Length: 638
Image (cartoon, rainbow, N blue to C red; front, side, top):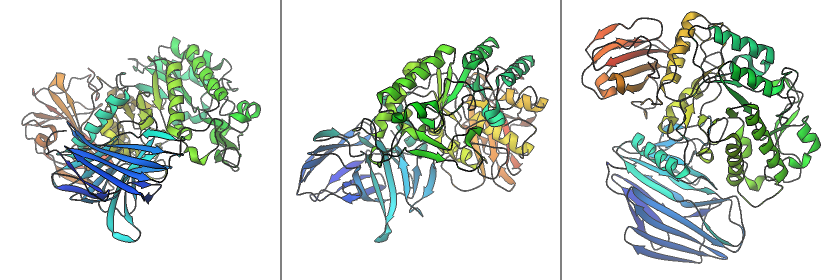
């Protein structure tokens, strides 16, 4: 990462160490095991060019830290040698004191975060996973690992109970007490500088993507999913009706995929047994979708098992257990409503350390592919990432990430390299290299407020944009464009659709496109993805209210889309600075949208505009002076 001087290490004789760079310092770090500082019987410090080594000799083992540099910054390597099992947590950076850093970026473990920026010191403990950003006056520092194949990486910013005025930073790995005697090399921790936080974080994301073999090469997904309107009520007759309705639209909406969501099975876990809604089974449903000209897609929650399922009844030994031997339950639903309308009172986790359980999932995914599925949405994937110290597995001795990635590798092998995989309710880092797309925000619903409002989706789509089209296509969630059965206003519908559509990730809906008003269908057509580009988010790291900006460049048109989004509860009047937002000094501004002809606003790149609450305004800045082509979409397709 360029733009700042190279940071440096300082090693102290007592075993503590510092790292420092341009205008910042993190000092007094000392390794911790399971939340407690090491108590070594001896500390050996050796210094060398660019770093050195500290060996902490322990009773029955040794923790060794290697301090190095590479072309981009600092590298911290950790080796654990022991006579017995590892601790649950190993933090090579423990209770260090940051200075010259006033804000932080935390990355959530997975879907729903919480991710985003906060001021330092924080009001509460901040946990961040895989990638953590620290921001100073003119510098950004990022701490991350590029290896999520075995351990969960966590960084933590907190005030110590005995020293409430002292902010500390800790960083390490959940090692889950695995293994016996021997030596374990933990993944490296990288510390990088950049002039701004976007550059720092995206540089880390690119490094991780390269190391983990990220899949960001599929065309942007433009698909229909049955969940967010029909929910569990899609049936074979309804599927026939929808396919006929979609194909009657002129011109045809170029959806790639029709994806069947939850509701097709008799009980979670019995994925290959269709219920009464599907008399021809999934193979017949996939055939209908394929014959209509779409790729068949399917939803599945591979780790979920209902207590009324055949799987649970015939194979209770396949269920993950609590330490006392009881089935490890995720949900207990003894009142209404039941999940997806099923009778199951309890939902359990599949124990994928059991070879027969893994063989069953292998059969499920292989069969779904053979039946014709080419798009797979795997949901509730967090169920597969359970700390191995908290459960009883059929075959113990490995970390949750190792068991989890065994399942991911099996799924990818079964569904094929060519087919599309969307992860959902999933941890992010272990999925890199397997998923083509990933849900990042919580479920959206029919109103602005409440548990299914868009606030989490907006926060996460903003915070997670730095790895969009780097690790995979980000999926903000379904886009609602229908003009009925909603409590969202017209402004809210258009604003949310434009925000989700401009980002450059997946674009999907559950709405009955053959039943919605003409202007809403035009809006959906306008969102069609193009060449896989992504939006830049000026003022990305700003906290607080006011408008947000998203900018998308169309190189073939010498033009830029600028979306001004006001998620606040009050109207906002702003003076746009399009030169700053786009990086170009001149051009012609047009209003832009799916239903009204573009209107020229002239060449003044600093117009004053007012955006109502929960609304957005979209502009097209043309370097050639020409308006957007009539059929051009927000995704850049012409």
